[in-house]
Length: 352
Ligand SMILES: NC(=O)c1ccc[n+]([C@@H]2O[C@H](COP(=O)([O-])OP(=O)(O)OC[C@H]3O[C@@H](n4cnc5c(N)ncnc54)[C@H](O)[C@@H]3O)[C@@H](O)[C@H]2O)c1
Image (cartoon, rainbow, N blue to C red; front, side):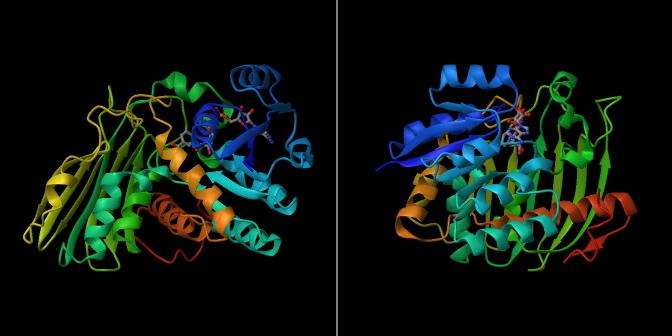
């Protein structure tokens, strides 16, 4: 029996989920909830399934076992609470929600309802990142000294004007919580947790749009390692993201999804294979919102199916994404206060 999926929101990211479900071979795309009639019609014409005007109607469809929450960031909370309340498993796009309080309530609701709850942070599944994670766990870096990301992307003003929510910081449209969230998450996954951040945010290339298109931050990890987060959507034409890890005994650098540098003092036979990981020129989002492949999403769809079938936690549970959200919120707080901020974040009420 295939697992039935229902999507909430038929915007930019929805086709990636639809393709991932279809390609999994074990999932069935049952329906989509989308209030915008034209978007709904276009989506069901491209991916045949039942179109619903509201989430509530989708939740009444008994074929739907998993709800993929693909609404604007500030609306995730409402959809997750309702889906879990209806006894559906939930796969929510990043960021999981806009506050830690929301994530905690979502987690509790999913636990009470005994449903699986996963977050779409698909970059974690990339072969290069998995190789870096193994090297960290095997202690191959020795003491980790630096963990950095450089995301020099470009989004034209038209991207922001496409939908009202993309113009509002409090709806989660700034570069920190929207585009850079993936790479902050990778640093958390590889080098976290974080002890302290000092961030500066600015708008370099999108006049008239009241949000940060650029983030610069210094990070102190709890391990003692240091790091830099540099993220922007102002830098035309947009180049591949870099993730860089440096330790006493090794350096690993991913560019796009490709391993660019893989050097350890204890060279191992498998290292030559790791150096071939990732496809050069693979679409990873640098130049536009539609500049992505769906294979990473497919791995998380397949993970959710397996989590249901074997009754285990999904690969990226809410609690794991919560830590990344806390770090992102701490950077907003730091930029606002123009001062370093310690984690755990003492007061998130001020952030938005
Ligand atoms: N994982 C990734 O790489 C990636 C890439 C792009 C976007 N995203 C995430 O996906 C989510 C959606 O982004 P997008 O670019 O597709 O946005 P979008 O604005 O293109 O699409 C969102 C859709 O949700 C619909 N919607 C709003 N309220 C709704 C409701 N109550 N019920 C049902 N539908 C509703 C809107 O009408 C819209 O069509 C965001 O959380 C974003 O961060 C993730």
